[in-house]
Image (cartoon, rainbow, N blue to C red; front, side, top):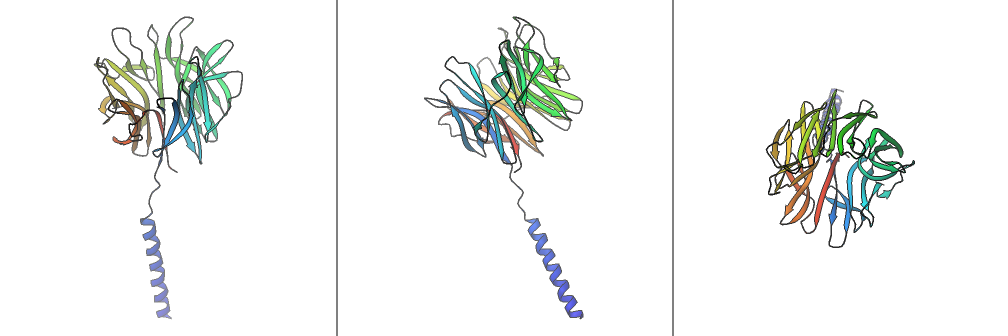
Length: 341
């Protein structure tokens, strides 16, 4: 009896060790990396995205086309963007799994900049028009929501935090006036700028009670573009010593704030940058950083580099570049989304 018990004990220990050995050697899932953008051929312009380095073409149009934002969940992939007609007027595009979708309501979407998933809800943000003009707005599950004080406006980015919906973009300060930077919380507008210069917010992130917005001011004739950052409405110029600078996206992790964009001198030689808490670092081989997302402790940035005179689509993971194209054709990126499968 003792001998049988001993044999069973050894067998149980062996099975336990084998089970632990399998668990110890489980390979963690590799995140799926989605990057949106567009390609220029000699004859066409192609809206596309890359999944783990493989290009997926959505449409081609000689007048212009681009994919601007992407999100994925449960095997479904949502992409927004635009193309142009013969008069160069933009037409919004929205795809689910490569199939064009229709946005309902009395507004014609002219351009879409952001797609955001929250639970089972799908939000897309951009600009919509009716017979009275065009407005900054978003659609929730296809139904339109016009943002307050958004005449002649464009919603460019969204964030959802504790059920509150934040949208950033620009709108006219009044008839004949230039675009001012704004964000909206649950439809109520907060104006970030005033004055004669065009302002274009490009990204928004919310952390606790803090609202972070980044964007770019157009040049004023004596200076080039200016990268800006607003925290709770307080403005900071990110690269005051550069002639040109652009801020394209933002992400917050704990107490750290990351902003991506580029800087240049009067020679128009651009360098991709990432600012961490206001301190700039160069992203190797890049001329522009277009988007950022943080997954766990990893920081992913989409952007563009150069191969001679040809634009190369790429992204960086923790500062290490990954080329998506070979430099044979011009390719530009616009955003990045990363998800564990």
